[in-house]
Image (cartoon, rainbow, N blue to C red; front, side, top):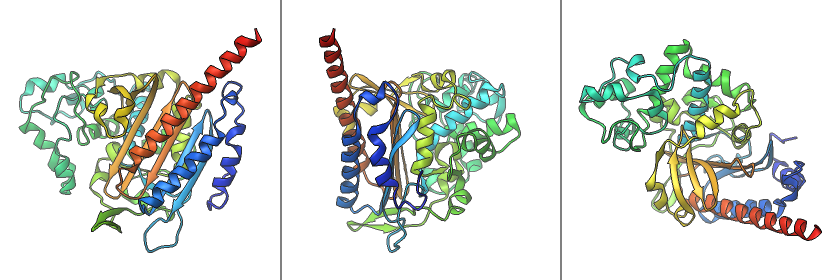
Length: 395
């Protein structure tokens, strides 16, 4: 039903947006809001002169709207469509958490295992902290280490084997498990743990347990995976007041769990469907509950531009953020790597999800995300109240 050339994708899904058949959700009319967001998304990309972008909206077990805008690279006429592959940066962490939860459920490792059980060479400055660092702390961003430790060395293009010994020079700011500190290097230690316990590479595990069973048509891992896809969006950075095409930076690809996945809007739409509980053979309800259980408070998120008007509480789970957005809970993650921004979020209660991808480093993502969720959730609650009033009057 999806036109892989992107010719009729937008028109088709907008036309069926209000025909979604779930008996509960069919009562909530979102078609006009979906059409409004489509126009809003396009208008913001145009206003900010962003080269290209794509989005997908999921309701229950269906992608109800998806569209691409602009071009894959400035100077080219090749359009972005719903199958155009972007780097999704830290949205990759959601995939790492899903994969790790599956591998753990198969008995390959336990979440409360000591990291040094698998990586005995790893050490902090004070060895007493080593025994306190559990596998779960890696993916819950609760290692206790100062935020973004040694990301500067990633960006300086150092190899992982040269970065890891640097942790022997520092200690956590708090005992592992007791405070939040966002990490890319430490988060990615889940890769050698899974490889050691399964005998398979991270890319092989991702393909076997996530990409293939969920039938993600264009998702891949790593630099080679990105360039093996002809329909790919190239990165752009701002200089002298305008966007310029730039080279794909390899550095963060070396930390696959943190930032190594490539995906299209359609891929991430199917990923959202799984998060909403509609692929239990891959991600069961028990695994989803484990992944999204709150682990550590992230108070800094409450000050995020645009989001700060709506958030009353924020936590990190396993590879996902958990936001209290007014009276609703949103499961969320954003991504930012040289030349790209990505954002994914969903409400399990309302069976609604959104993914957005752009090939430029623009904060317009914050505006578009909050616009979508504030508008959608307000409309849903209003229609629910009206339905309850109607039902009450009928009695």
